[in-house]
Length: 242
Image (cartoon, rainbow, N blue to C red; front, side, top):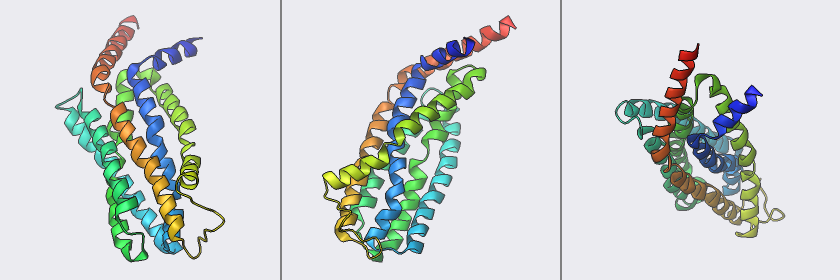
């Protein structure tokens, strides 16, 4: 019974609701990224080149996650109510132009491997901030310490469940809207038409969710401060009763 009461109290926190909402949408681009290897091979890159490109993106993401956390921590010392939200919005915003550049601006040719590598690295650095700069630290601030594990568990469960829908969605968009045809595509030899169709499907499943995340973070400017203050008061009252 006590666990159920605690779960209800966590789910009533507005900051939690908003972050989970954006997280559900924000997990879609990351789930869509699994198609990158297939897209690279459709362009004509061999297995080694495709793996190297994915490595650049992964390394950029690792650096960006650390960098985002450090920057947000520093800024939150001066702007405790808004710094983390601003950093998260910056990260989600950067996903829009980088997705567009990666998937539509760079010519889909093996001659542009270096351009893809640089763009993927910069994309990874800039779009990977949200969890470390905002979501996880803000969760820790809006609930009592004893409920932190619960709030992280709820977030992972909800985001993971809905995020799994992204991969099928990329396939549906690529096939139904842009004419991707699995029967005529040969990954071994590449496919110009297949690469184009898949890139447009990826663009929709990345740029649109990033734009929605940018919008969904906005209400936190109004509710985060209040939720954090409520959590502090609750912790003080709990200490007084011990």
